Image 1 (cartoon, rainbow, N blue to C red):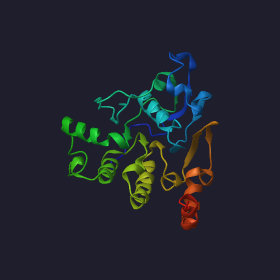
Image 2 (spheres, rainbow, N blue to C red; image 1 turned 60 degrees about the vertical axis):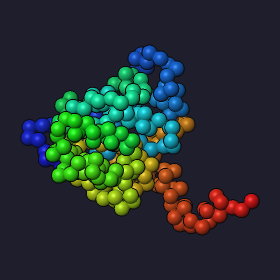
Image 3 (cartoon, rainbow, N blue to C red; image 1 turned 90 degrees about the horizontal axis):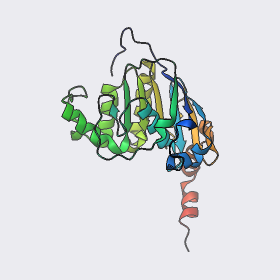
Length: 248
């Protein structure tokens, strides 16, 4: 875990995200036609942790990616020093976003995507800085081990974007991640996380936004579909399975 930097203004770093529709050059671009973004104007971020939740295709990862790119980060993930690209697939949303900041200076920033962690690990080796990420190459670890190693060794005081970190983590590892998340928050950091995990989104010092047909709405943890569906299943899995897999 990186230590606090002397003389650097601590987080939070971003107060809000505003969509400036005068910057939209292609109104037919898919991002601007997602139901959750059609009426979007402004998003107030939590000073510590903000969660984006919603169904697949709801726009939560699109928004996370756009905010990360608007902060000068690579669309495929990594730190501000990583500008590699394998296939350009990000949306045009970042060009229309305006960020209202608490502080202009961000000491550290990272964007971690579940599907491109392999590419980030390769770039780390290409840059010759693998010794900053533990004593074992990320490529020589499992997906979950590599993710935890990266966060433990590289995150400290800064602004961090995580897209579906649970894709790499078992339930037990997700619980361990909550401990790590709390430690990062204690380093005066700010995080924005897109997730489906009811374990990860349970972190208390946070705000949850649900992306859906009615736009982007703040929502209580126990009111999220992720919590309600998981709770209903675990309370009576046989009843749920009987309903889902009933005999013809």
